[in-house]
Image (tube, rainbow, N blue to C red; front, side, top):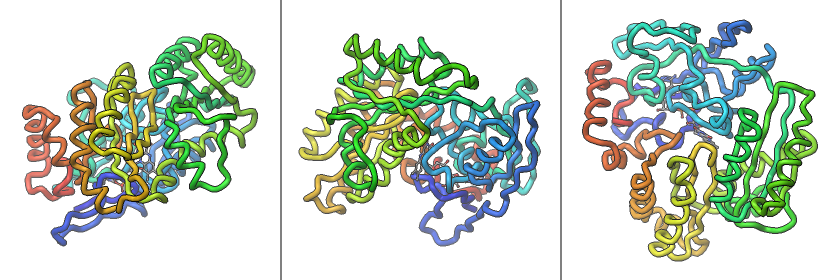
Length: 404
Ligand SMILES: Cc1cc2nc3c(=O)[nH]c(=O)nc-3n(C[C@H](O)[C@H](O)[C@H](O)COP(=O)(O)OP(=O)(O)OC[C@H]3O[C@@H](n4cnc5c(N)ncnc54)[C@H](O)[C@@H]3O)c2cc1C
């Protein structure tokens, strides 16, 4: 049985293996918002609700559901839960796991577990919902969830600025967090090759700065108060960082459409990359403080192995999570390029492991990384995962061939 949400997952979790005897369970028709509790700041939704639908329902109740990712028009909350999706607001609100209070799950033996509790405090033994979050459909089918809501921001300020290097970006992140606290809701890094792909392949886009720079940051601040002159405060902070030489050039959005245009540059990178052929993709995380070291070491190692490869680095640097993709040099055939995936993985993943990182920060393991993870997780950890799978799903009915 292969539970399938919006099928936007990037590791082959929602597609059947090659045996031909799998049954796909579509959650699409389980799409009701069951309840919004404004006082409890919770929303109870069925698993097939599309993420954007959940965001809209929360907004209609003057609340915020903060999970936000480029696939939000298609991915479903059940898929988000099963992959513990991250997205652009993890820095402020956490991953899907941190947004979840309760679950309803159908277990492999058809037992329905009603754990739909909207409690912020409940210390009554093992917190079982966490087993199903991020399990990629290997332990049961999530049918509904109670998710946390937040006060809706009334003011937002978005800036796009250039920095000299990733180290400067990490230092600026710390400075902005000291100055603006929890109002820093997104902090994304974009290397020049990623922006260049967007400018070349996505219509109606332009470089927001006067010149091309190696590294860019998109920073978003949000506040629940309208009276706070957020854009002015941001401009003052940027000016003082420019004086120090930490920021090379910057632009602050002065309207919602300008802010949307800046976000579009960030969110179109994957689409722009597809236009230019196959990529070898990595979804890695290291402690935020180690991101510059990772970038400093990874590039020369890859250049030595691959020569003219294009390194398309971008992502949620505020969470230490980079999408570190290799795009083929134009002359190389797709098949020849993609055949080198294992060699690229070895270089990138070994480096990530040496820096205490993860080879899958937000996309999961699915079929794609099921073998690869064996190199990086300890035997003790893998054994515990297999033991849990065996207890809940002794006949291996749920999503066989994925994760463990
Ligand atoms: C353009 C683009 C941008 C993306 N950006 C991000 C990002 O910023 N952050 C991020 O984390 N991910 C991102 N993703 C990946 C993807 O959108 C997420 O993993 C998302 O959470 C998957 O949701 P889905 O409904 O499409 O799940 P699917 O792809 O359908 O399924 C994913 C896994 O969950 C299981 N599953 C689905 N529904 C259930 C259920 N009800 N019960 C049990 N198991 C279930 C499936 O079996 C599968 O293993 C992006 C993808 C795209 C295409």
